Amino acid sequence: METIRVRLRFLAYPNEVGIILPLQLCQKLQLRPRQKIVVSLGKREVTATVYQNRKLPESNVVKVTSALKQKLGIPHTGLIHLKREDDTLRIGPSIGIVTTGVTNNPEKPIGLRTAFFQKLLKAQEGKGVFFFIFSPQDVDWDQHLVRGWFLRPTKQGRYTWRPLTTAMPDVVYDRIPSRAAEKQDIVQAFKLRLAHEENLPMFNRGFFDKWGVYKLLSPLPEVNEHIPETHLSPSLETLRSMLRKYQMVYLKPINGSLGYGIVKVRYLPNRGFEVSYHNGSSPVRRIFKKLLPLYQHVFRTRRKRSYLIQQGIQLCTYQGRPFDFRVHLHKNQQNNWVVSCMAAKVAGAGSVTTHVRTGGMVMPGEEILEYLFGPQWQVVEERIRNAAVRLSTAIEEAQGIPLGELGLDIGIDTHGHVWMFEANSKPGRSIFKHSRLRQADEMSLGLIVDYSCYLANF
Image (cartoon, rainbow, N blue to C red; front, side):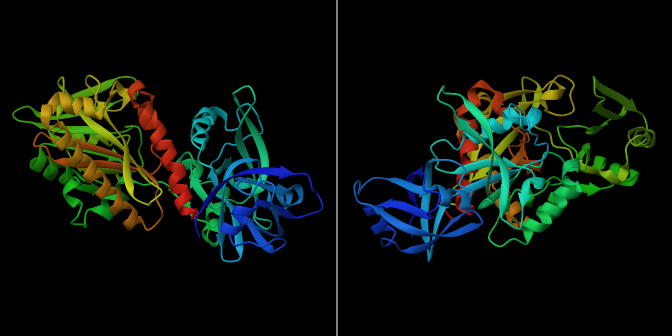
């Protein structure tokens, strides 16, 4: 049956577990006066009595008694959806974002990340959902209840954080912030328990590593043309043969992020081998006559087993500096991948990577493409978008878990070929700080809600 958008209100009847619907809505939902029906919110269910409001037959206002509100854990009034499924009337959808570092501070309940989550939760406006944040220790599995933080508007036009006990949601969005947090016992126990819960999907579970993504995609003929040759735990001989083949390679930490630990090695005819990396405060560049001392220099403080070697790509340049793209993708409410943003990241002077922290700058993707390719820029953009959608589809299918959001690092070489360097299941949002990418930011956040509605079957 179709999903119906309504405006929910509470009615002070503490002894009557009931729901009051306008006559027309009762007819749509095939409900009779005083009929008993199971009403659900997230993972909680309560049997309630149906009442008709004949005074306003065409209204979209639905009232629930305070007894039903308490038993279901309905967090607040406002725009929401109803859906009848067999003998159950569902209220929702309810979307929970699981993370760590949740505190009891009403001003900053998620510490330094509060502003990020506030922006995320504002995307619910006009969508008709219950949207909240919780931590693994906030769940009462026996009662299917969770203590969550809700962002609520005030009469002054501002927002306030409110801790409320509500039903375990219809769908969970994984925003565990780091690999270290992911390894915590309480996080692991939560995810194991959640995996055994019926009809409670979690999307974007866990983190990717570069080698894992390569192993998934390199055998697939539909996308492997976009994957640079990569090898794990590079030996001296592997480094030598890759340099013979490509003249330039990158050594990357398997679980690295933000460009930390990346080393570039180039073969310079008649000069030797150049190594470049960032030591935290400034770029480092050295030339070695022989490859062995370079190899020993690189791995004197780095563990070879935690690194991989990747084919170097001669990227297109902007004003003499190489650039790549962060392509941000989402699943929409029809379960299709769409590109919400394509931002160019231009390398800083002397930098090994295009990351902003090492002097890189962000530009709207279409601006740099138009500058480089003139009237053909849209053709190139479409090529990148198509590749990104195919890659995202392949990653999700190969992972075998629901993914609603991906950040792909994609480059174009000097021959116009599209390459993917990295896939992120918890993509950062720093690109959206650019003033001309704010609309893309809003689209991206809204799509997170839309895909959650799809997973929740609303």
